[in-house]
Amino acid sequence: MARVINTTRRTALAEETEFARSPWARFRGLMLRAKRDFGKGRALVIDPCSSIHMFFMRFPIDVLYLDRENRVVRAQQGIRPWRIGPLYTRGAKFVIELPEGTIQASGTQVGDQILIERPAH
Image (cartoon, rainbow, N blue to C red; front, side, top):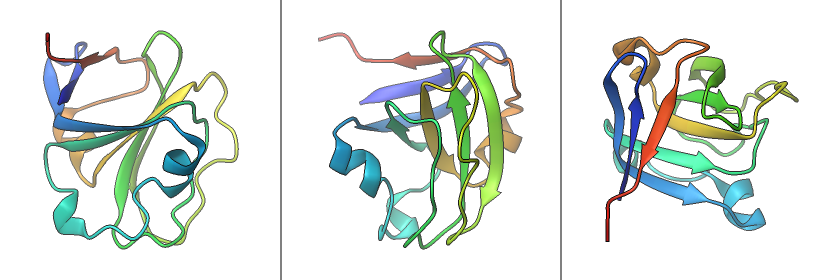
């Protein structure tokens, strides 16, 4: 499992990270999952992605929008189910969806550098 680390703040955002890269996986995201299956220390990376929707979601989440250099270009906290995120985020190449409260707890801000650390095989 990959870890997500904010290297600017020296904080761990997630210890267990899933990836959604196919069109279906990107569309589905976290839809219909139970909150207990996406608790503290979890993340979903949707790549490529510059906007999100919260249709059929059962719980709020935090979302980081990152550019090609893995810098945060937008950070949204506590997005509630049945909402739509920004239709376009300039410079965003992918997003990281996180449990609600992760952005605040880690102090993550626009401009921070994020590392997605994959274990060595």
